[in-house]
Image 1 (cartoon, rainbow, N blue to C red):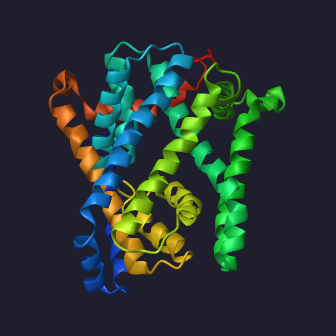
Image 2 (tube, rainbow, N blue to C red):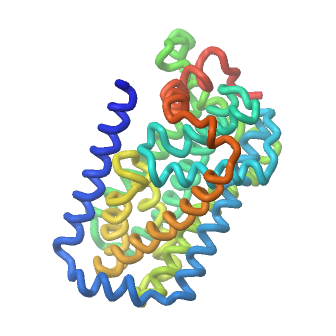
Length: 338
């Protein structure tokens, strides 16, 4: 009962935050112009953006399959894609603590994958995606400096990039610290996880493909945003989309709202504004991208309704799996890498 109350309270707080941010952004805009952008979007370019995000699910599944294979888990491609699509549905309807990642772990367990491998596979997949974002942001910094004159924005995005690089380097090199320090229970889990990710990116047989997919997936999101921008007549260049969309994706990943709603819109308005895109157009792009995410999520929901696991699903068990992730996948029971 206490766990359910906590999840309900968390969901309510995130929902209120999403609504509050959306209202705050919209109150200073021309809502009639915003509506016109949304209803007059070029249907062909909207379908192109939808097709790109749908294609992205195959890339996501391919990256995840490579990680699971490196962990010694054989995951059938279609089964993995099905699990991924179901997780996207849960991302739309549940707070992060019982969202898609927890469901992915639970569904893997139904296929006789042990908890340590399930948790490590999902966590490593998430962190690999984060590294891909940071690399793109580092690559985009020189172009940002040459195209944007807003010093505060440059400092903000540059600071976010530097923090991401520093955090990644620290995590991947934790095992180089004195043994008495990394033996502490609070640190040991992160040491093992950092060693695992380093193995995946530097030593696994498919490291080049894994790293390349981590970059390509985010570039697909940028391409979809570019298509939506052209669909509403916004003047956004391909280069600006490639530079400014990764920070939006990174900020959207912060788990403080429902499925990124509100945070994504605020980040999109702020970042695309640096390229001269009016706020109404930037907000329209974000809302259309959110609508595409909902459509993809609904497809995952249909797969979930037809799945045999639905009858045995227990949200409490999935939530507990997510809460116990450090002890399952990154703690003393788990090896650092295969």
